[in-house]
Length: 233
Length: 294
Image (cartoon, rainbow over all chains, first blue to last red; front, side):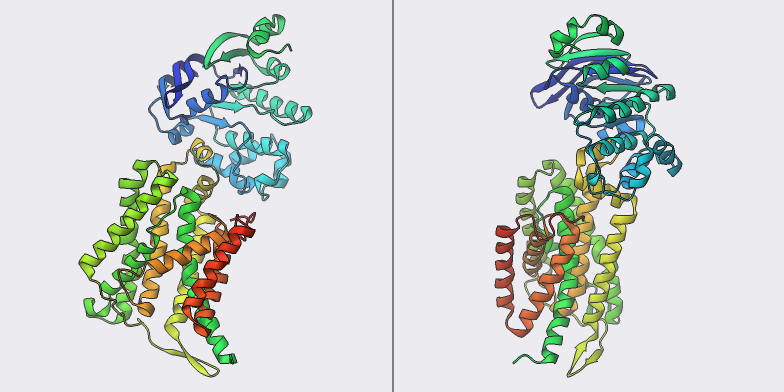
């Protein structure tokens, strides 16, 4: 579905992502883990075209996306849930969802379908997104991305700052997207959560992929996790 | 002693001024809010609107002043919007909308427009006939009907701009871009195109206010300085980029400025407005409407 071949993302002369090659298949969840500053967020931004200089090859169902302006990428089928949610805080929840719908001019029925995943948001539609709780904001961020009807979903630390019960619920919803055939690239700091829902995990350090393995293998042998992210599950 | 009719007259003058000021300042506020560009040339767009209104006036078209006025209302925003689009394409986009460099760039644009008009239009202040002439009788005095129409048209244009922002796709894109341009791009918003549209829209609003005030104040190549200063005051007092704050501040400052001008002196009104900005910057640097949803 999504294939990265020697992708480099740079801010001026500084290469934050250096020749990364990865692939995510339809219905698969690929976890991306690494220490702070390892290049996880920059890799997602590079895929979205939000990093000024990017080279390499980025193929979505065989179509090359490098060279496209950033605003053209979501329409091709890649949706992004940024770190820290980055909702349009002064817009209402309904307007935030509409931003997702407009990516592919999807009908309102699509928003209704997405709201079935997060029913609590139905009561918040006319509320400014910035006034919601952290968990509800994260639900809006995921719902907004799903309204764009993505083939590939990029999630940047959706559990950041949330209590475990809310994290669990959001990640379970994300995991359920497998059945719709969505390919998911998930940046996650919580090792337990990542091992629970990911199919494969890639470990990144200094902008390059150091290790890639099925999640169950890393669960059985956590040495690479200890080495590249410094924690034991 | 200030009498009732004098007070009412001052209030009317202030309200007309406030409505036109709100229109001018809304354009400046939109450009700053969405693009983070401090447009020093904004007042020149007002001046261009007034000059186009003069070109379209009865002398040129040889028709009734109302016809010239209506043509100017349609043509001035198109001409000025096209100039703004060209400035965006040729200058602002090429310097990546960098906030500091755009100050210098728009200053250059100010001089280019001003000197261009001086060369083609001349240095004289030229009066325009009001497109409609009638008086509305108030207790103790009669008041220009045209000025009341100006206030009404300005309010209508403000409402139309508000509807554009609140109800349309491009309005949603503008508001989203204002809040977070990077995330807006991640949702398919062509941010540079939005910037171009916002810059043109800001210029068109300024041009429309220029057309509206031309029959009251005439047209002159240096007339852009006053609306620019007042618009900056309004935008700072209302909170940079805060549209609701801009409208609120325009109402207060416009009415206050008009009343002080009529009852005391125009110079005093400018001094008080400038002191108000200083006080706001000290007490509430975020503007009076800080925290309000634009």
